[in-house]
Length: 257
Image (cartoon, rainbow, N blue to C red; front, side, top):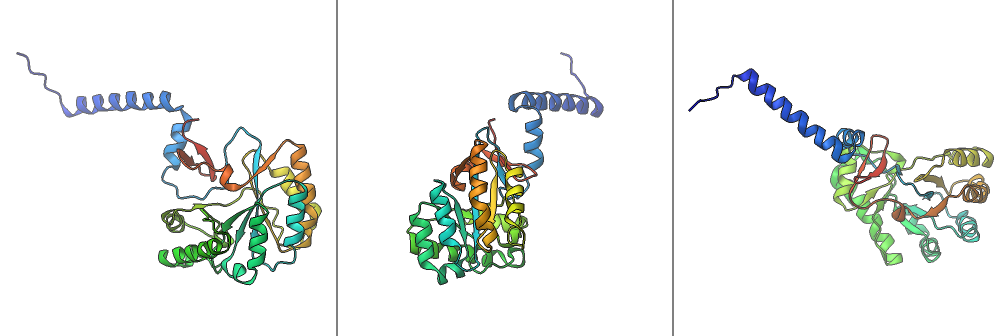
């Protein structure tokens, strides 16, 4: 009987061949560059900025925390255009305006969590981050009777620890990919131009309730995007709940497509 003796160099060569064959199999199985994309980004802790979809669906969102004077006008424009939006509410705002929370909910809009005190999450411990989220969510449920699984961090401020803390609470962290920076003193024409030009399939649009210019821009934004064939949906109806990954830009994608 012959005994095959392999030296270290030959063993390494065989292992390299096996590895190449295995990677080639995965490359063909999952679709080449997508596999590389998943591998490079699988360890990234990122929020959802937008969603990869062939459908012309977008989500209109509002960060609410600056008084309530423009809420009736915003709700009326949304109703007149038969559009449902997602409102991210701050806990302290909920305390001041519980009736507005009811109005938003009864109008059929979605309510998300924008923290309890609108503080920088990266400056908090994990336990304090969770407390901010749980406290605001409890206030939302007390008024609406509904749970929320969506969180938007104050100031868009996050890091890996923040994302992990949010995930551990069972929430999805939602950012945006279209931001006209409407909280600054800019014209409604500027707001309209930015939103209309930058919106694409799966976009999450960020607006605020802090300016009349936003109110003036809202009707035009909705009508023009509808004219382009876009459909407005709530964030929870836009994002994927399972079998997904998030690429380095924050775009959420399905694993099997």
